[in-house]
Image (cartoon, rainbow, N blue to C red; front, side):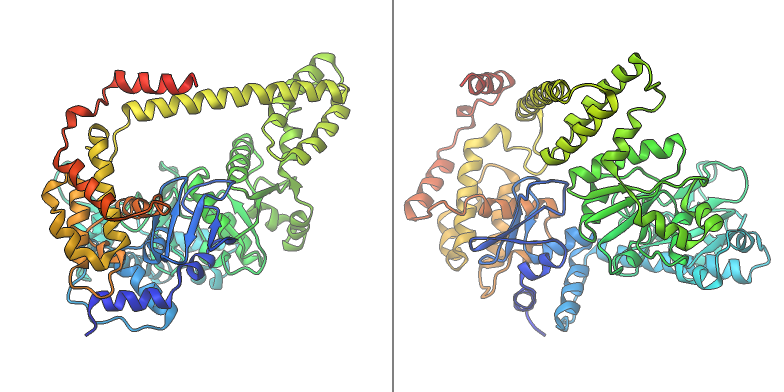
Length: 579
């Protein structure tokens, strides 16, 4: 059997980080490195750098970082073993036999299995069970048997424990059933009962085909109307999208974003496989980051009621922040895509897509809602609303076009409108700078470092500790000498001591050290911090004197020399602000 470090070395060699990252986001060459918009947070200016020489990545915006394995773990929401498996399959490598796997990895595997078994139960119960209400519901929505099977739709019977009894017969423990959010414990008698009851069921899949959660819709007047799986080890509704597993393979770089499961399924059945939906939540930055990987343009297809219009406005703003072009689909005489297709057919809907309206035009038009544009007061109010909206358009060419349209519609001269917009931009910029500055001061003064809580009160020591860790990362072949001269006992902060000890342990005696060897011991956020130590100091020159200075600082360290009281930090930033 291959040594673990040897296999990891082969795995990373077979999966160059620039190739793997480039399969998710667009990379731009910048000297010897690559840059891209970070897939882990929304941004317009690329702040994530890929370093082929060290086979690592680091985002200078959000601090995400690591190697190719860390990247796959983060972007696919996988644990270490799952990321290894995905990369091995990608490169055609065979994984050596594992003596053990992590506790969380085993629990996630069992949750996947439980979800798959539950989905099979719901499906068979609907197709073959005596209660036909679920099947009647989907038939009434004009879904074909092929579509029902494609999405694995099902029905949870009106019973307190039928799923529980079935799952127990299949060997699933109470712990797994509660961790998967299939069952919950009664506060009265402590017994487990089914969470989903008397609901048509919509399995939610990840991009690898695993069932990660369920959505359920009631068939009576019970509340809530829709119920989604809560956050589990394998699911977070704030970052997953329904039917993305189908939509990502669509040849066009356009995705249709709807509000509900049935909208997506109806569109898919009508031939629009590029439809997705959020899972009972408004669109988030995490959703936008995920969408960015698969499309350049999003066509918003929300309900035509007031709630749907507000959701559209929110979505436009979030998509714009992520650098995604957005268009609005207007559906006259229908409240949602499902109803529109039933009334007018798929070809008519395709024409709606072709004639979809630029989101900024739509938003600008909404500024006139409820106003009498033939009255002076109506034009004044329209202008006020438009100025606030136009000041928020970042692209100056686009803004200029809409200024001309607004001036024509309001009857106000273009120059006057332009001056008001520029004043609004200056006001917004000033407010943003003030907010940003206050945040900097507040964070430096009050924010606790969740990864290394002792860092704030021991900053001089942390600098020396990270210097020694940097020496180790830069020269792993010298690990035995470095660890002998700088034993872990001289470290002040527990986190850096743990990192340093783990690095020394992994490097000593290893011919092929890779930072991935620490993945079982540290979280993704902690791995990013470790990677950041090396990445942010790539230009720092390391020599024997640098190393010796760091050792001396730690051995002679007295944390009383670091004054990081609230008053001291406030004074420090006030001095900087006056420069």
